[in-house]
Image 1 (tube, rainbow, N blue to C red):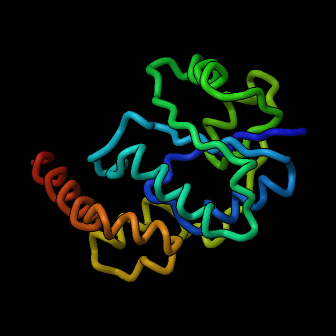
Image 2: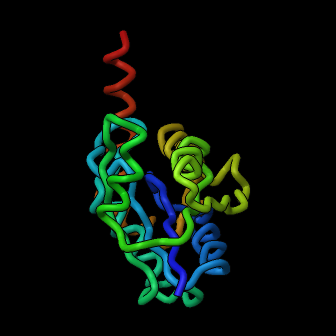
Length: 177
């Protein structure tokens, strides 16, 4: 049985992530979803906590009939200050795996340096389906809800996530003065 890692920050979890998970499952049997930068929250680039992101992912996967949740694990992993050691830290926290799925060039580089197979899922509608773009739209009151799963939207509403993203952005902009 083959297993892969899908690595992301999921700030927030969106439809591009679902497409990447489906791509991963077309290549492997089981998938470990790594919630990266798990220590970060309430920052402009990382407004949601690891627990909130895990809820977005888990609830979205549970609602998707094409995804077998029994074949997925979701594991939060914090950053380290030594990039070359981060992949070894991942190895200590996840089960054995055969491939890594990521579109982050630096993450892919770190794993390929260790001769680990890295696969890049096709990026669908990348101009719209990115956490950065979705957060920007939240801040600017531009339509964004069609870019995330219904379950992600429910989590964001439950935690007043749009208000948080706006407040954090506003505070961040004021601190730069």
